[in-house]
Length: 183
Ligand code: ATP
Ligand code: MG
Image 1 (cartoon, rainbow, N blue to C red):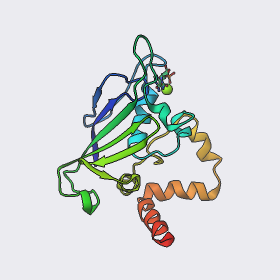
Image 2: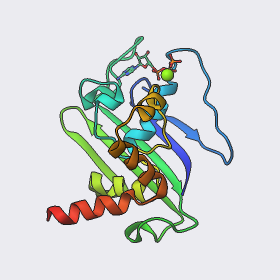
Image 3: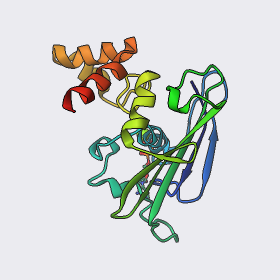
């Protein structure tokens, strides 16, 4: 599944609606310090189900909502949508009947997040599994944070195994087994 478009509204420094088209090939994001490059990658991680606000450089999940700046007042909600190309029909069965898949996460102050896939409200888990199967996802080694290379080198064997499993595409299966064992 390929990313086609990332849409942000009120997410971190992106107060105004912003669309980023992700064309085939290599995409680079350039700009001066503090212009929002890392925020963009965090938006990607967030819509894929990131549950740790610390991984989003915040002290609470509401910190992803635009907090005001310049002459603009703070907002009360943030929304990120990710459009995926599903023409190869690689999505889980429940969502595999359409050419493209739109995953949306929305947060309102003090209300937590709501996720939707193609307009239908789903659990965070459904979104996380969708991306775990596609070997991307919020914790995927496809997204490399600053300092992460060092973390991988000094990781304990179990943590390093998790990285290999994600790369091998079996993370979704492990996750489902864990969920089934809890029931
Ligand atoms: P660098 O080149 O230094 O890595 P960058 O382009 O990656 O910079 P980011 O870290 O993405 O920059 O953006 C930082 C900016 O985002 C800061 O100016 C910060 O104030 C702003 N910012 C972060 N969260 C919010 C928020 N909730 N509301 C408004 N602005 C925010
Ligand atoms: Mg940065």
